[in-house]
Amino acid sequence: MVGYPKEGSLNYVCHAWMQDTARIVVCTEAGDIMVCENSGEFYTYVERDERQKIRCIVPYSRGFVLGHSNGMFTAYERYDDPNTGLGSYRRFKEVTTFLEQPY
Image (cartoon, rainbow, N blue to C red; front, side, top):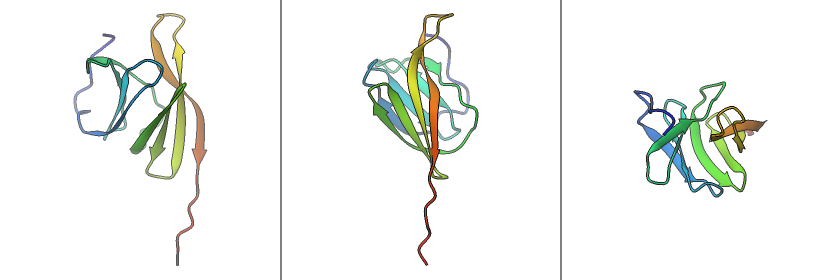
């Protein structure tokens, strides 16, 4: 176990099982992204620049994509930290969609 979950991050909004590691990624109402072992034990946090509301998560072969409440999608991919040897995820793509409102 790398660390412990932060206080106040216990309202979960979505989760997904990762295809490449069998770990689960859990997103909280506060905007945190936690990675847990398949036993449910906390593993690490995924670093984020912004704290936008996360609405959904979809796994894919190299990581996961987050859907935010403002129409933005952020893709994360798995990487192994060369300093620690631990696996985590980093942001590599961000897309914003603009939806037309019906009249």
